[in-house]
Image 1 (cartoon, helix red, strand yellow):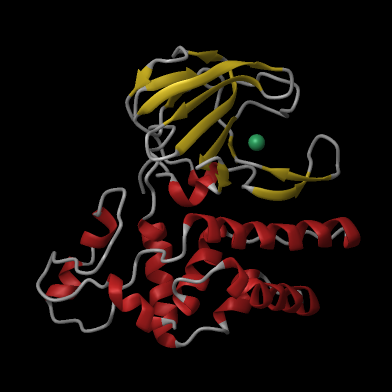
Image 2 (cartoon, rainbow, N blue to C red; image 1 turned 90 degrees about the vertical axis):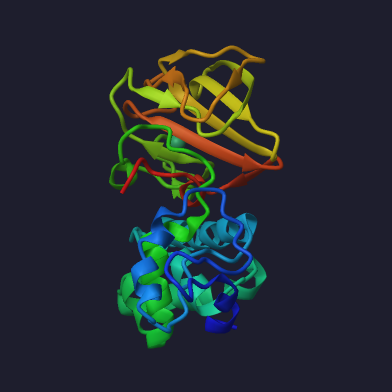
Length: 282
Ligand SMILES: [Zn+2]
């Protein structure tokens, strides 16, 4: 597979022509940045879009977080990885992979990490051809072009993330737990924007995760914000992407500091919000 499966998502020919069956939900800004390269006759295939399904991308990353968490609990040694690197590597090498396709290779990468005390980046760097590495770098730049959820904040929060989606050692209980979203530390009272055009399907209070709001759209996407200070939209209300729907906070018992916990579901199933959410500009 590899590079050939990426050929369906190429930027080729004259500048600005994007061919293939791209299913882009968001802007093409990242792709267009490469228009000059394509226009000058650069002949390499440019694959800047994730090819696996949202669920397979989510499950592959989730699997890796479980390997890391189990190891941390058994050995008191913590390994972490960048989810964007994992998705870029798998896409560059395996194209439109399924979770089943890549479980073994993920296990092997982690074994090598622990056996040789290497980072995820170090191990995968030695596993790609030059062409694959080119695609990998492009995917790190584009973040996969699958970001159909707008940013919850009007600033770039990518480097602020304090906890990723996936398994982790709970900061509250110290036990293994599945963290169903991402945590972004922000001061109490920060404007929280809806990530989608949709309808507020639920708001309320939960003892663990405080004031929350859930917004659903007609494509089966659901976005939830927790630990809010204030909810500013009512159940049944239609909201636009970008509209302020809450003020962030530190509410509920399961928090160790002011932050927004953001979750996303697709047809009722959790997806890793990191892959599908714009991060407030690059
Ligand atoms: Zn959280």
